[in-house]
Amino acid sequence: MQIEYIAGLFGVALVAGAVDAVAGGGGLLTVPALMLTGLPMPQVLATNKGQSVFGSAAALVGFWRAGKIERPRVLPLFTCGAIGALAGVALLGVLPPQWLRPIALALLVAAAVFVGWRPTAVGQPGPRGPQSALKPGLIALTIGAYDGFFGPGTGTFLIVALVMWLGDDLTTASAHAKVVNFASNLATVLWFAHLELVQWQLALPMALGQALGAAMGARLAIRNGDKLVQRTLLVVVAALVVKLSVDLMG
Image 1 (cartoon, rainbow, N blue to C red):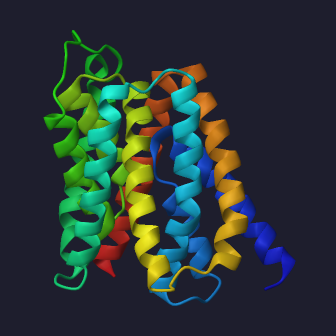
Image 2: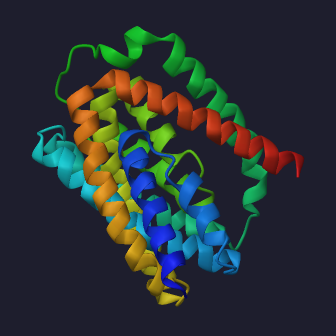
């Protein structure tokens, strides 16, 4: 493949990594870019996972170093996220993912209303007591399965779920969402690699862009806090709503 295509994919992944680190939604950029290469759709999705796992890892490291991730949550979020993702991939052979589009669309609209109209719920966490692994684990298992089976809006759903059910502010929720993102991406990319679907000659240059962009995005989220996360999240949700609406009409 020509160097111009590789450079273009690197640039797209750089921007996608930054956006994804803040509020999710990087796949809105990387999947269409990979589709332009002419790859079959299974290879597009597998290669997208191959590059995005590096972005989620870089963002996770950035949030971890800044002290934004609570250690007791890591094990249930990571383990259940990986198990859920593999369960979702297994469902691909049983159920058509298209039936989830209207449900995901409705949930994204609800998420936009929640994030945009409930400022007290997205910037001021309530009292923090000791938490069991149950709630984080259930969130990771459910949304990890959604990611493995369908995917669009995974980061958004994770952030909103962590705000609603664990009382996180948006920046903290974004940080912990990266644990699940990394687990889900890692589990699915290992599965796709086993099936030899990942096109590493494209995934690796994009992975470099993803990692650099995600590191920058994590720093921006940490430095600018909930205002940046909220605004980026609303833009991502709007883009996802448009995409799913077009898919439904098509």
